[in-house]
Picture (cartoon, one colour):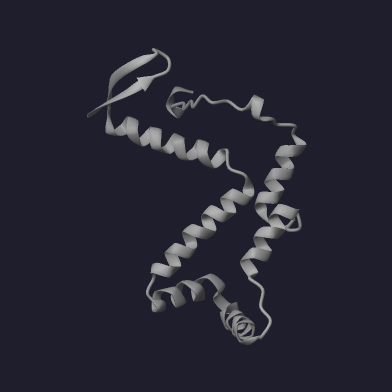
Length: 142
């Protein structure tokens, strides 16, 4: 158990509270859930893109090639050839910028995030209706 001191807006003063490891883990989980829930699709795409870029950058080349082979499976040879042609051409545009731009312009309608956004929009959900209370129920109590 760890004790933390922080300013409580509810009590309008400094407080000291004990935090168990279980409480901290649940707080971490809830913070991740809320942060992701409040991100726009384009922000999520950018975050995951940056994270994967860093992950692949830190992999040894052999491990990276294995990751790519496993991802594309039977189509790996075709992808490698397409990328080789792209890398060797004189006129190149940044593929990632085109993809991210398509998200902001609404061009990419086949991605999962666009479908979720469209569904939520059609339901008339607003920020005002969003609950900020995190409740978990033990299934055994139901």
